[in-house]
Image: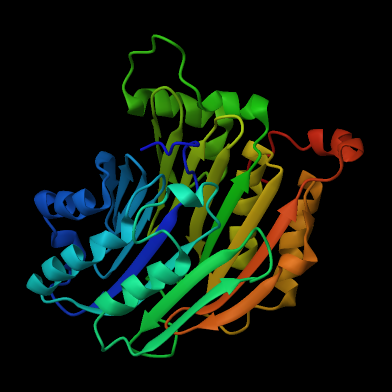
Length: 357
C-alpha cells in the first residue's frame, strides 16, 4: 500500500519464540490461519517454499519465516504488523504453544506521518505490545539506538527469562539486519519490470536475482526471488536452518533495500553483508547485529568497518551503540555513509563484488 508521499521501504520486524506443543509447533498452522493473521496486518502470501527446518513466505509486503517454535515476520509500507499479535496468540494457544519471548525492531521511517495505528510512534508501538503480551514475559526493555541521530534503531524485547534464548540446530546465534537508502540509480533500475512484461512474479524475480548477482551473496542458499509490478523485488534464501532475505523499493527519491540473515560466525555473516551492500551501492547503510553470546567485541565492530570501507562507506562514530536486551542478548548498531563526491571514483571500482571468495 503506497503512502501519499511515497512507498515506505523500512520494515517493521516481529520475532516470536514459543515453548511446548507438538514437535512441528507453528508449522502446523493451516493456510487459513496464516491468512487470518496476515489479514490483520493487511498483506498476503505471494510465494512460498520450505525445507526440513522452516517455511519461508514472500509476502505482498516483505517476508514471513515459520519454524516449529519461532516465527519472524517483516512487513513494509503502511502495514499494521503488530495487529497480528492477538490473532496469532489465540491460534498458537490452540496448538498448546506458549509465548516465551518477543522482539520487535525497526529503523526510522522515511514517511512516519503516513503510518497508521499502532505504528504512529515507537511509544505507541511499545504501549500496544505491553498491553497484549502475557504477564509471564516479565523481563522487558525498549530503547532507541542511538537516541540523538536521524538514523536510529528502535527495539523492544520481552521474555520470560533475562537470559538469551538457546541457539538453533546449526548454532545460528547471530542475526544481522541491514537498511540501505540512496541506492545507486543504475543498479536500482534492475528492479523495474519492462513495460508489457506478462511473466509471473517468480519468473521475473529469478531474472532480477541473476542480473543483480544476488545468488552470489550465499552460494549455498536456495534463493527464491519475486518481482512486483511495475517495480520492487523480494527474496528469501534458505540454507539449512538459516534464512536470508532482501527487499527492494527502487524508486528515485525514496529508494531503499534491506538485507537480513542469520548465522553462527561473525566473519561469515559480515562477508554476506558486504556482498549484499555491493549489490546496491547505497549512500547510507545502517547495520544492527544481534548476538546471543556475550563475547561480541570491538573486534567484530572493527571487522564490519573494514568490510564497508572498500565499498566507499565510512562509519559515523556518533551513531554507534550497543545495548543488552532480555531474551535477546547484545544488540549493536552502526551507521555508514558514502564519501564526498570527489572520492566516488574509488567507490565506483567496488561494484559487482558478489562472488564467492
